[in-house]
Image (cartoon, rainbow, N blue to C red; front, side):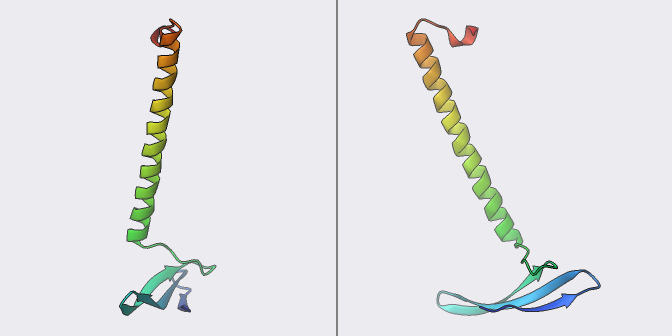
Length: 85
C-alpha cells in the first residue's frame, strides 16, 4: 500500500491517502503526516494504545500485590509481623 501524500507548508502538515484491504472490502483512508513522513495515529489508535498501556499497568500492579502478599505471608511464617517493620 503506497501513500499518496500532499504537503501543506501553510500548516506544516501532510495529508495522505492509502487504499487498504480490510477483509472483504477495500477502502481509501486519509491520514495526517508530520514533516518526516511519519503518520499521526488516529483517535481510535491512540485510545487502543492507551487501553493497552492501562491493561499492562493493571497486570503489573496485580503482580506486585501478589509478590507483596507472598512476602508478608513468608514473614508471618517466621513470626515477623510485616506491618511492624
